Length: 382
Image (cartoon, rainbow, N blue to C red; front, side, top):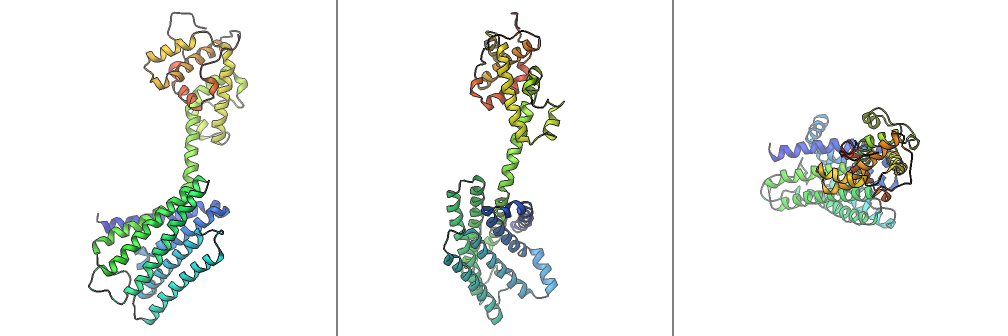
């Protein structure tokens, strides 16, 4: 596959990703002021990028029968999208005259391009010429197009970098950083075409096309940051529910009063059909497991923890997990004593339980199947 074909494929992917992200994030983004500007900016970028795809250009030329008008229209829309992007990124804290200046500069660029086309002295052509001798009359037209994009994208890089450092919203900060990175790619693309106007470098044009299409991919990812964060939290909560389920189930059976709802018959059902949001389910399992362990401290026999630690070493449990594995063995013996009907004694704290460490609890749950059975020893164990 050539670089040009690679660029075309990335371009198609970027367009699909941007429209997917726009549709997915439309409702939540338009409701939040800090996300609304980004959504509208990416909408403008998606429209401009779509109009520059070869299939769309060919279709437009076939429908209109006028290649010149199609070329002018997509370049004007691209310049307008660049100006709108700066306007959307500039927030209300900037003076009104700054926004008016951006609007005026964008309008001036559009009027210049349309005027040059109407004068027909600077025919823009469908694209920047890939090779040739001295700059044709259309070079002035392309200088206007390229400079408009370079200036707008540099402004976006600066503004997004500044805002991302100020905001306390982690999702918004990452969205702004991705937006700035995409604009930096666009700066390289348009600056490269400016250089190409005076010093032909046809070999670099396919690589520049790859950059501008990657810019579209980053625009899509910019909108998908909040969605990715939610998915990461969902995966984290599902993992907690899945890993903790055997320990939670066994301890809930020994101390049923701690469970708000009894465990289901399988942890797969607990994850796929939770009776509450997974975050709440995970939180509840953690709390109820800790509560059951506190209750079982009244059945914690002397020296059980030390014996469990020796057993964990015999099983070659990694040193970092020895404490959690020993705790699983001690809790397993206490659970067995409770289920056998042994009367409670003065509570004997389990080592490490007072810290309420969720990581310790998950590690303990991983070693629960191996450590919860009766410890292999000749001594009498409750």
